[in-house]
Length: 149
Image (cartoon, rainbow, N blue to C red; front, side, top):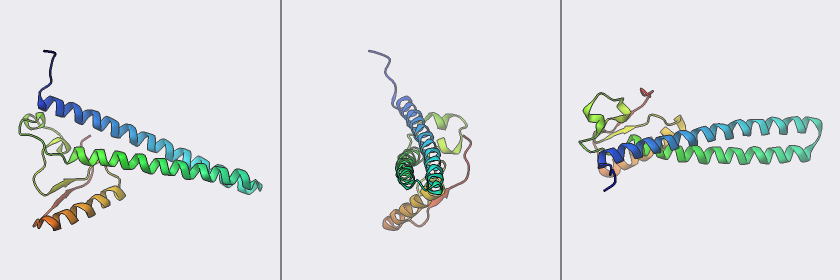
């Protein structure tokens, strides 16, 4: 049989790949943000010159780049949130040696918001508070701030 990965190794490999995907999505979103700002500057300059057709085209380009940026950031945020808050088995490699907090298994009622932008984190907090209310949880803990990564 070919070298089959154990469940723990597969989970760790999947997590690494998912976080690489999220990082790539964030980079693409930053690139779209730069392109959006450039298109807005071009629209502003075209408007100053009186070239309203070019200004309109650049404004539409800026809107398209902004839409792409938001979509990419949303996809990245979903991956980051899922990976930071997944339930890990007791044999996780993170449990065998010292690891950053974001790699450790979370206790019930704990939500890790590392890696999210403020607006994304606020949206997750709102959803998690609604879920906790529905479950009649007595408390919920949000982990915020910078991680070790």
